[in-house]
Image (cartoon, rainbow, N blue to C red; front, side, top):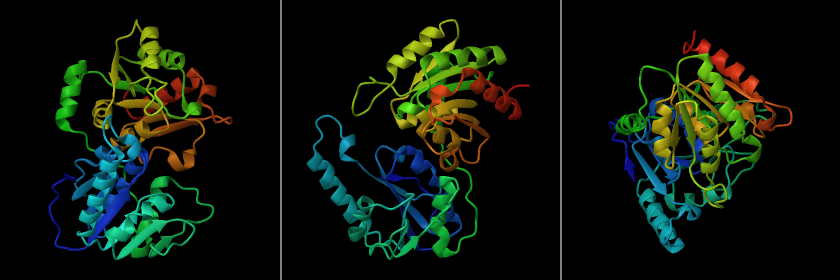
Length: 352
């Protein structure tokens, strides 16, 4: 359990927000968390999985973050039985909190998340979806033609309370000490802007090539005096559980041997957050890294393959989404990406 040590409110109403999906889904829930705390005046706890919980650290609108581990995230030598027993103990602890409401922070509820409800036994359960369920007391049905960002969709969970406040920006706070340590480790100065290229993506059609990233790095280097940072998820690309991009990163670094490229592998989520906090600009594909950057309020050029930019575009930050009709980022040229980088960097005052 993580305690963010928020000042206790006079209200005794308690809410649990369940964020059991991936990194991006959890980050896009932060405007909801803020509104439940500040607009509805609830004391807010979060249930998150061990993989995504770090994005909620130091969030002043959260009292406690309770974490559980998914079985496919277990480490070597860790038994499934141990994980399940730990989860049952957590359910008992959550039941003792006597929550007034549980918000299911998911674009559409599913049966797995509802398994937590009988033991937690909240007064109300609010969820998004199209079909009712006896465990859901308040079902919020989005409009059929719902062309809105997923942040706006998540904010609809406030409708049963009549809340009117529009969703604010995403919110992540990097560990200040880790940011300092990362700056010192990699020799990142404060005198020149940092342009970061994040090269990893789980989806095949959202993977831009090493050659493209290297060519883009050279174009950026000629655009303005700057520091170039390469970010990636480390590991072997053939690892079935946690594929990484060490080989791709090595290719980029080899092609950029004439540049002072700073290579920063980010094995843990808090490492990615700290490294991104040091950036002034990010180029990446749609995914968790993009939402981390948005949560840290960075300008972003985002490459979209077979994902929906209406729903998943960076929220409330200067950005440009590039997507082709075939929904494959390899159809996006280096010239197109550089043009958008140049325009956006100028518009936010990084370049002249």
